[in-house]
Image (cartoon, rainbow, N blue to C red; front, side):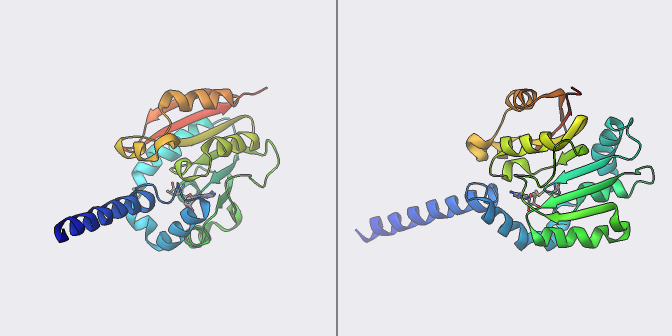
Length: 230
Ligand SMILES: C[S@@+](CC[C@H](N)C(=O)[O-])C[C@H]1O[C@@H](n2cnc3c(N)ncnc32)[C@H](O)[C@@H]1O
């Protein structure tokens, strides 16, 4: 009897541990709401860049070049980075001598933004940082030449609402750069996970054209699209 009781306690403990691991570690609070996600990012903000180990050459090749190529006809683009975290996209772009644009970057985590502020200090007013949720965005329609949102859609309360907001604030002909979670870990996001086909269809339904989904990292595809010029 005691053995069965111990086995039962062990099984319940194991199940609770797996549930905790899935909710907090695997999906980073995505099923527990925005406050939990942001709280977790606040907790780990000081270690984020060390964990990610961004490589300057990779960032230039994988983020900067495709974005600048898509904006080649725009001499001083105004770019919005949604869920900027520690300011990855602004930092990547502002380091480039050939980038002459400006940025606005929003994130809901004040501690992630504090890291971004420290990194972006040398660039003065060329990047404005704002603490704000991804939906709704605090900007008028058609304000930005490009909107970026990397490695964040799966953590937002609704990726569809967020993408709609990003599209709204893009000018006609403007560029969207975002990512799609993929690989075995992506399936842990259950119904929040979108296949490539589903993601491309969703973006096309929102009025985006030239939707292009390409291999980017083990866990992510990079998606580029353009808002219809009309
Ligand atoms: C994995 S990080 C990505 C950061 C950055 N884009 C990058 O590529 O390094 C996800 C970011 O999304 C932010 N975030 C999560 N939920 C958010 C929300 N509802 N609104 C705005 N930002 C949010 C987090 O604070 C975190 O900084």
